[in-house]
Image (cartoon, rainbow, N blue to C red; front, side, top):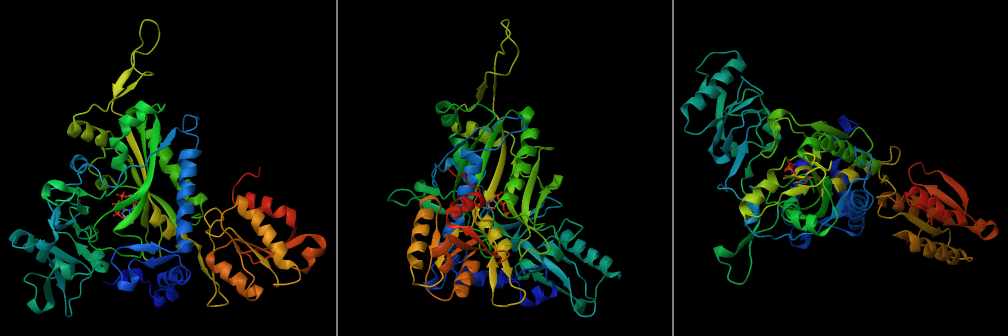
Length: 540
Ligand code: ATP
């Protein structure tokens, strides 16, 4: 099974034609060469849609997830009401009672790949669609999809084609061609006009209706024992909502955060880790009263965008996109907010791909579980309701609204990798990975200039001191200092400290900055505080 789809490979010619575009080929090669990301099961030829993180990648991903947990759960932001947001963490199972997925709407009646039309809202079996395209002299950009065996639909396609070509029906048979949808590559979908649409590019790629991986619980493997690997972490939060409210001191509005693996049997995994079959999510379900939903939605949307910027996606490659009305998900109410935080990946360039979705899910999920489990999930809010004669509110019982910022850890890592990747304009083989220091897998390197004259001992001592406070400090005494710096530039290490002859005389070290390659001398006793400041940590 080949792993790297062609779509993931941004050809060098494209990159040369547009200097704003980075080469996905080169980024993937660096990920392999430096141990960020490997194909899963590579020695067996790989398995499509699965990726492993190597030593540098595992640390990078951990740093990203730690930053998310730190900033969302341990030290959450100030909310729109001026108070610190209330947030607790949760860690629920990948396998849950199968009824969870019936309630959530993930177990449906269909298992066939289908395409959706974003314009007409039509849903079609992918194997039931044919496509009319022009050939020969009458070349037309759009292609028209129609439903097999549906005469009206077929006629419509021919009519639209004739109109586009400014000609009359019948079209000369040698100038057109009809092929099954399966023969149209995804890269041409932007030319496809859906059977009930009037503009191209509104059909989604074919997706299995049921994307969930099935498994069996217990030894018998009978149909009664079917269970599913979770396709999102969110449902684990909803089904423990009551326990969290009953056992911790949280009060609405508050959030529950969870990160963990999710599995989707994507029909066409592609674009490196962007669309994989096993991936990790970082999700918040924020529970609030429905009257406050719009306020909290706007808050989370803006704060999550700012968060991605704060960890290094500061360029115009990051954008926020509010969904159009016709894109609203099944759970979203008319007028409720839904937006995507998007990154301009090399393979979506000049377009953008979703990094995180922020949605007002109304009370849909809690209501679904309340009905399916027949357990009351309402919250009793003592601060609301009519006033009693003593002037105190009588309280109000309600199902809270939910605002969900749902991010992908793997897509986050991929965006960070793409953003950091900076080839040297003057030396073609040289690359800098300009990670934000907080996310960088190696925080600092401590090098003896040469492996003698007391320098290794001083370097060792400094490295040992730093390691007590900061994770992953690299020490290396081999090779020339230039080669060691270059290695650190590729690994994305932001700062190198070099111990040389002068250090032994005046207790200063050379500090080399990755991004500017500038060097300066600082006191050896200032190294720890310098790093603390750069990594956003308080010195104690
Ligand atoms: P898409 O439209 O790209 O399939 P989605 O809207 O279905 O994504 P959500 O269900 O909102 O995605 O999931 C939340 C986040 O989980 C996404 O923003 C993305 O970062 C991540 N994610 C979803 N599917 C995948 C996947 N197959 N591989 C990697 N990450 C994924």
